[in-house]
Length: 389
Picture 1 (cartoon, rainbow, N blue to C red):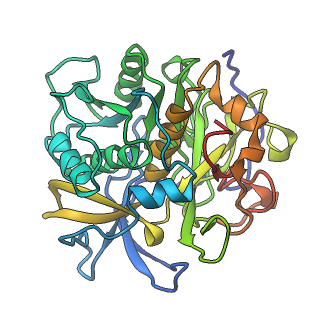
Picture 2 (cartoon, rainbow, N blue to C red):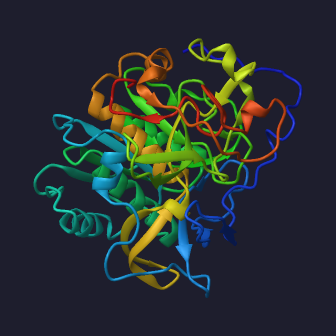
Picture 3 (cartoon, one colour):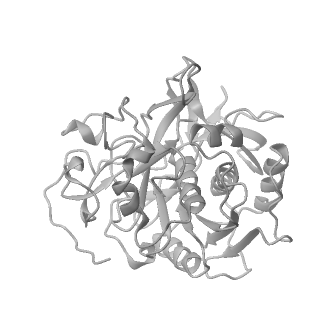
C-alpha cells in the first residue's frame, strides 16, 4: 500500500496519550460492581511499545487469583460473537509480543484442558514458539509481557479452538524488534498476525504491511487518543467494548463502548480508501472493529510466570484481549485477500453495531462516543459470525 505522511493540523486530544501506566484504576462495572485493574506493562518510552493487557487486582494492588476460572471462557466468547461450531480448517494465527514467556506452552495446556479444548502443543504441530527471526534462542523473560502472551494465546484458543498458533517473541519492546517479529511471522503462511501493544502515533512502516494477512493491533487502554501500530493504514485497528449477558434478547448479549478503549484520527498516516466519510477523519481512523476489552467484563486467563508474585487463574481485559479475538475471526473466515479491513468496511451489516458508551470528550463526538454506524471506540462493531470478515 502506498503511504504518505500527512501534515495536518493538530487534532485535539488525539496525541495526548498515557500508555502502559502501571497504576491501578477503579472502573465502574456494567453490572454495578467496580474492580480495580492494572496495566501489566511499563509505560513505553519513545521508540518502544507497551502491552495493553490489564489484570483485575485485589485490595493490595496485586493480581486477583482464583483456583478455578472467573471471567468469560471460550463458550462465552463464541456465543457472544456467533462463533460456536465454526472451524478454521487448521489455519494459523501468529501472536507477536516482546520478551519470553517461559511457561507459555504449559499455561496454554492448562487453559485448554480446563475448557476441554483440543490440545495445542509443539509435539502435535499446533503450537510453535520462536524468537523474532524464527530461531530458538529466546529473549529474556519479562513477567508483565508474559501475562500478555498468556492472554493472547488464551483468546485465540477461546475464539478459534482449531487454529494453530505461532508465537513470535521479539528481543525487546522496541518497534524495530517488534517489526522484525511481524515480518518473520508474515513469511510463515499465517492468516492473521495479532499485535496487542502500542505507542505514540507514528508513520507506518513496511513491517506491518503484508497484503493477504489480517494484521490486527490494539487501539489502547487509556481512553480517547491515537496509537500506532493501530493507526497504520495497513493495520486493522481493534477497539474495545464492555460485554454483558442480556437474557431475553435474541443475541443473549449486549455491548457498549469501553471507557478505556483508544480512538481518534492519525495525523501521520493516510486514510485507507475503504474508510468512509463517516469517520470525519482526514487520516487513518481508529478503530475499525472491536470486541470485549473491559476488565469489569473480563476474560479468564491462566498464567504461571508469577507476575507480582501471583500465578494461577486471573481475569484480564484491555484491547489486548480484543485484538487476538478479531485476528482469530479473520482466520475462521479464511477471507484475508488484499487488505482484509476493506472487506469488513464493505460488509458492516454482518456486525453487531455498538451504539452506546464513550471513552472521553472530543470534537466531533463520533471520535469518542458510540452511536449508530461507525464510531471511534468500537469502529463498525463487533463480530456476528464471520460474514463481515
